[in-house]
Length: 479
Ligand code: ADP
Ligand code: MG
Ligand code: ZN
Image (cartoon, rainbow, N blue to C red):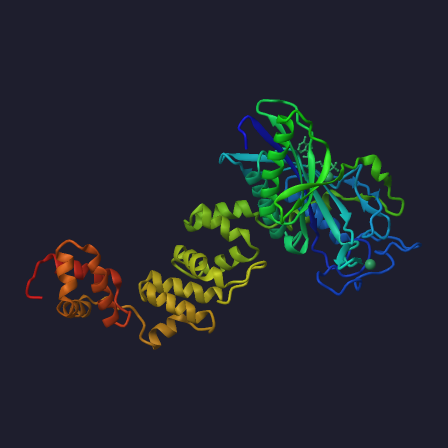
């Protein structure tokens, strides 16, 4: 991006709430059912039906608001947002326009320059999702299973200044919603979606430029790409003497471009009216206090604590809190080992690629992994044996300590035993000895390999190397 311009970005994030049933009826919200099997007269908007508000949807919205430091409205109302689209059988969506259940929150993320940036949350409101259009050949089919699935829309202030920052904000938001059980945040299933609002201005300018809105981006990578493209496009328009038009665009993944969809709709287009079928939503202080108590330790606080308590890197702590259940798994194991740093390494560099993500499921019990960390930390087994044990643990529920002892895999640290193998190796491989003594220090690797092989992988590699070096440097020509 040209350094004399600055991008100004605000995000609208839609998250489907993790309720069992829809927001105004008892139809299930589960994803992936055959089309139009999770529908009833209420969510299809048939005449004569009335919405009944799902208590849990309201609670989850409040929990999200509290986790994002919002003020919670003691009283908020719902409004009809009217528009015509085939995936909206009612012809309107029940949303909140005039009042929102949560306001004025914030979320701090790491900015592009490494500093902390506090991103304002303008509001969070509740609404119902629309259905889905499925394109098949020349036909477009309507699936209403998603009609009436509860959503929150989280609207940020235009406080973000670049693509990396925007994705950092989205990731932090996702971690919070996951940790609080508000949403399962599956971008690939559409339960977390993001609209990007973006404008550019010359550096140092006070007023904002005209914004465009890029609708429904469904991956972090596309958010960043769409922002890069749209920033450059708007700068190009201005540099060529044109003016940016307020419009709704979409990101074309195949072309890597944003494409114009329509002129931006305004509040008048939606003909908002107060929803006549709904009572206001009232929340007492004790309701709010009870919900505040349901909020677990938040991911950023937890990452800081993990770093402090277990002496791990900030990077590793961030990874542990990024997936639901992974930090819990780690901490369950960490309680049982003297070597939590080894446990983090085993988990992140060896085990993670064999685990399921979203939510995190490990093929190895945390107790068993902790036992392996102990074996390595105590130097009961060496790291090569540790790897072998771990690969067995992936498919068999074994106690690594028992197997190590039963099958004679424990590390040999006795200097006399290893010394005998070292002597035998030096006699057996005179070429390597020559090479080492004439300055090719890499030759020690093949000597070491031979000693390890003689021990059937059980020698302590550190003692093995020490003894080799001693004997090689002693210049003892008898060997
Ligand atoms: P709308 O319904 O028109 O999309 P919202 O209030 O729901 O309006 O959302 C507006 C979003 O656009 C917010 O996230 C806000 O931060 C962002 N925004 C507002 N003005 C600008 C601007 N000039 N440049 C970039 N983003 C902006
Ligand atoms: Mg918008
Ligand atoms: Zn229904």
